[in-house]
Amino acid sequence: MIRRSMILPAFAAIALGAAACSSGAATGTPTATSAPATTSSSDSSSSGDGNSLASVDPCGLLTQQQVSQLGLTAEGPANNAESKGCGWRKGPTYSLGFYIYQNRPIDAVGSNGASKVTLQSHDAVETTASGTGCAVEIEVSRTSTVLVTTDANSGLTQSCRIAEQYATLIEPKLPAEQK
Image (cartoon, rainbow, N blue to C red; front, side):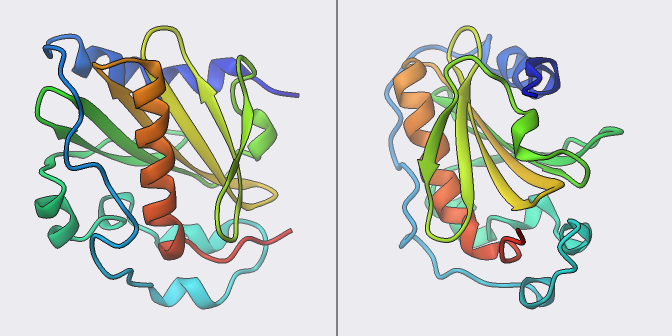
């Protein structure tokens, strides 16, 4: 069963942060070749229950070099009872967040406009929220996911394009998907 109520808190934080921004086109969009991917020691093994995500720091999914190259400003950790997260801002053009869920299967994401996203080695779905919010949920195990959220002032299409680019950028740093 897909529950939209679980994704709304992440979008609410993004929407509040983006409300004060002026519109503009996103520049310096992320690409998988902008910096070499690094892996953590947790990448090589997983128990299949999402525990391999326990050691992943959402703020560490982008290197300092990537943050600089992409022109991002760190907004810092955004942890809550359900997830650990981290946020950034690209000036007035978009906001970005990564959220690690240890106990949230991919079928628990929002249902409106959900569509499959093609990544290299993980299953993923894209969902939208009201306004300009977009998210890509990456499956790491049957019980754990990583959520990439964006909110672009230039609209929903641009927001989803940016979310997909960041999902592609961080995917190599995630533990191998466990089915």
